[in-house]
Length: 102
Image (tube, rainbow, N blue to C red):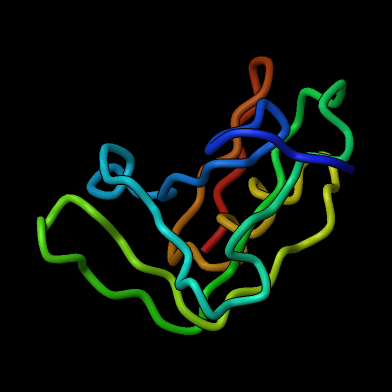
Protein backbone atom coordinates (compact mmCIF):
# COMPACT_ATOMS: atom_id res chain seq x y z
CA UNK A 1 0.00 0.00 0.00
CA UNK A 2 1.37 3.38 -0.95
CA UNK A 3 0.47 6.23 1.39
CA UNK A 4 0.61 9.92 0.52
CA UNK A 5 0.33 12.98 2.69
CA UNK A 6 0.29 13.31 6.44
CA UNK A 7 -3.06 11.48 6.82
CA UNK A 8 -4.76 8.66 4.97
CA UNK A 9 -8.46 7.63 5.04
CA UNK A 10 -7.39 4.09 5.96
CA UNK A 11 -5.46 5.28 9.02
CA UNK A 12 -7.11 4.30 12.30
CA UNK A 13 -7.59 6.62 15.28
CA UNK A 14 -8.35 5.35 18.78
CA UNK A 15 -10.41 6.59 21.74
CA UNK A 16 -10.80 5.49 25.34
CA UNK A 17 -13.60 3.21 26.55
CA UNK A 18 -14.43 5.10 29.76
CA UNK A 19 -16.52 8.27 29.90
CA UNK A 20 -13.54 10.26 31.20
CA UNK A 21 -11.26 9.18 28.34
CA UNK A 22 -13.70 9.47 25.41
CA UNK A 23 -12.95 13.13 24.79
CA UNK A 24 -9.18 12.63 24.98
CA UNK A 25 -7.00 11.99 21.95
CA UNK A 26 -5.16 8.66 22.15
CA UNK A 27 -1.67 8.64 20.70
CA UNK A 28 0.50 5.58 20.30
CA UNK A 29 4.16 5.87 21.27
CA UNK A 30 6.32 6.43 18.18
CA UNK A 31 8.58 3.43 18.93
CA UNK A 32 5.60 1.08 19.13
CA UNK A 33 4.82 -1.40 16.36
CA UNK A 34 1.23 -0.11 16.20
CA UNK A 35 2.17 3.60 15.96
CA UNK A 36 0.59 3.70 12.49
CA UNK A 37 -2.21 1.21 11.94
CA UNK A 38 -4.38 0.89 8.87
CA UNK A 39 -7.92 -0.38 8.58
CA UNK A 40 -7.58 -3.39 6.28
CA UNK A 41 -11.36 -3.94 6.19
CA UNK A 42 -13.10 -0.54 6.11
CA UNK A 43 -16.39 -2.13 5.03
CA UNK A 44 -16.82 -3.78 8.47
CA UNK A 45 -18.99 -1.71 10.80
CA UNK A 46 -17.66 -3.17 14.06
CA UNK A 47 -14.63 -1.85 15.90
CA UNK A 48 -11.26 -3.30 16.76
CA UNK A 49 -9.53 -2.91 20.13
CA UNK A 50 -6.05 -1.78 21.04
CA UNK A 51 -4.72 -2.87 24.44
CA UNK A 52 -1.86 -1.03 26.15
CA UNK A 53 0.38 -2.24 28.98
CA UNK A 54 0.83 1.32 30.23
CA UNK A 55 -1.02 4.56 29.57
CA UNK A 56 0.30 8.02 30.39
CA UNK A 57 -1.07 11.53 30.16
CA UNK A 58 0.49 13.94 27.65
CA UNK A 59 1.76 17.43 28.37
CA UNK A 60 -1.51 19.12 27.39
CA UNK A 61 -3.53 16.88 29.76
CA UNK A 62 -5.88 16.15 26.81
CA UNK A 63 -3.76 13.40 25.28
CA UNK A 64 -3.33 9.80 26.38
CA UNK A 65 -0.09 8.10 25.35
CA UNK A 66 -0.29 4.31 25.02
CA UNK A 67 2.87 2.22 25.34
CA UNK A 68 3.50 -1.48 24.65
CA UNK A 69 0.34 -1.89 22.62
CA UNK A 70 -1.29 -4.96 21.11
CA UNK A 71 -3.93 -4.81 18.39
CA UNK A 72 -6.65 -7.39 19.07
CA UNK A 73 -8.34 -9.13 16.13
CA UNK A 74 -11.49 -7.57 14.68
CA UNK A 75 -14.18 -9.79 16.20
CA UNK A 76 -17.81 -8.69 16.33
CA UNK A 77 -18.86 -8.15 19.96
CA UNK A 78 -15.35 -8.38 21.44
CA UNK A 79 -15.39 -4.90 23.07
CA UNK A 80 -18.68 -5.72 24.81
CA UNK A 81 -17.40 -9.06 26.09
CA UNK A 82 -14.17 -7.50 27.37
CA UNK A 83 -16.15 -4.83 29.25
CA UNK A 84 -18.34 -7.54 30.80
CA UNK A 85 -15.30 -9.58 31.85
CA UNK A 86 -13.78 -6.71 33.82
CA UNK A 87 -16.97 -5.22 35.29
CA UNK A 88 -17.64 -5.91 38.99
CA UNK A 89 -21.43 -5.88 38.41
CA UNK A 90 -23.37 -6.30 35.17
CA UNK A 91 -27.06 -6.19 34.30
CA UNK A 92 -28.06 -7.79 31.02
CA UNK A 93 -31.48 -6.72 29.73
CA UNK A 94 -33.46 -8.03 26.82
CA UNK A 95 -37.20 -8.23 26.34
CA UNK A 96 -39.22 -8.54 29.55
CA UNK A 97 -36.56 -10.57 31.39
CA UNK A 98 -33.68 -9.26 33.48
CA UNK A 99 -30.58 -11.20 34.41
CA UNK A 100 -28.20 -10.01 37.12
CA UNK A 101 -24.61 -11.19 37.15
CA UNK A 102 -22.53 -10.73 40.29
